Image (tube, rainbow, N blue to C red; front, side, top):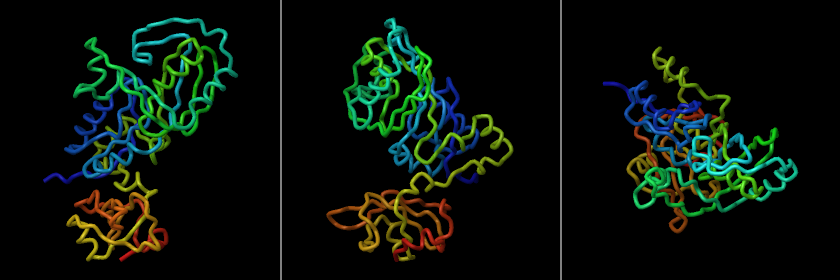
Length: 319
């Protein structure tokens, strides 16, 4: 019987590939049945796309909720129906009067929590249909505006009508919509010409692997060397180590009590057994003051933090 592969590959998605096609390719290479990505990256975009295999697919939601960093090249004077370079041009306007000072002033409007309208050509569902499916059928529906968080937005290169932004943002932010909205404020229109995601949670582009590198490793039988541990995306969660009794309770889906004087009542913590295996993600239930096992891992899952006797974990030990 083929052994299951459990871990995360920090993939550098190439331009022109859909996130789904990358997942399908890695599924074929690895032979692992359960494979998933951590939030769609548009075909025209490149960069960090963590791919989860085996039981690591159960931590997808935590990666999707993490902050991301993008480098976005935007062109002024042109608008498209998809808000990026893949769409049909809908308007030309002269951007020659725009200055760097104007752009800097406009950018300040977009820092913090803002309301953003997702693109019509997006994966958001409306009455069971993807928005882009409706748009392609001529039945486009504008998705409802929603609040997103932009931690920072900086002008890093300027060669008008092109300029490049570095954007650090929270989940659900559409950089295409950001480019379009900046163009609207400037009065000349704009579209997203190029996009690179350089960070997704704990995964950085400097440590990512190209599709050809991933192919080579799996063909050589060393695909496991690419894997990040299942707990690597959630190292910001608090740590608890469980003895055999509490481990059994968690494995059976029962909530447990942990020492309140040492563990902050954050929403989540990560639990390990005495062997140092990553055991579960526990979620705090405030009204009961108990920690409930939200995700329990049924195989030995080596941790990113090593032996439970190390100082980092032992300072947060509960039995």
